[in-house]
Picture 1: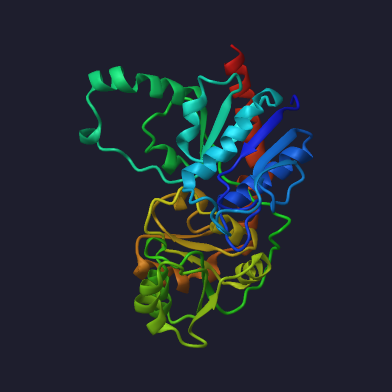
Picture 2 (picture 1 turned 60 degrees about the vertical axis):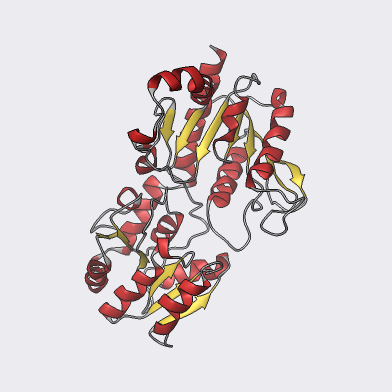
Length: 360
């Protein structure tokens, strides 16, 4: 395809790649590096401590997570990065944002198409809360037209189905760098919960399932701002050799934990848009046992790369059947559907479509 000049814009909440966490900043990192590898001219608008092969425009010296500046909130950080990119719009064929939905305000003000990836959950709006059509037509028409000028990328079908505006949108699954995640044929004798330890991610349900199945469980991740939850729902059940909390882990420790686990438990209790940890686990050969909600059924192939269950009791039953899953099939599944290469193929098509439509 034709080589493009592409701006990647992030919220400045984290560096690219992030330090000590998972999530969308890793996706942006993978995307940026692969676009550069394919010969595109990529500019990343991020913090100065970011590491990238692209041209880096450092909007701030460090991430908001490290130290907040000027009393800014999240929107101010995002606008700082976006306005910098818009000031330089003549240098780009397309501007790709990862900052939420504020970018649509600029679509009538610039001559460069905007692609927006929505990384946050979309909650379905009940019709009773929507304004009447005559009010929408009079007061919201301009906003709607601006919004529809962008090309929207959703990271799962489940996320997209709740979007108020369906036009001009694509679904592109997040991809991971398979070179980072090594396949491990023979696991160790434990199951794993890895992620933020919060009620909506269901860490307490992973504990209940492991106790019911009488297996060893390791919990890894931060419980910052959920200290009371941790003390009430997790801490009383911690016991060496049974339920263990191993703390916050770096990427090397994460990969070792993922590869060594018999399965990763994903008892998600909210509409998580994607769930990167599931693809990372399967890339290591580790099956996923997850609840039947959010994007889990799109990522996990039931009874092939793990089990999709309805509650912690079914999760305990699935734990006992985990040896039926072929770990090699888990790895192959990720190679086919969730690689960086497949993700970037999708974004290249979206960029071309956005450029063609805008020029017309």
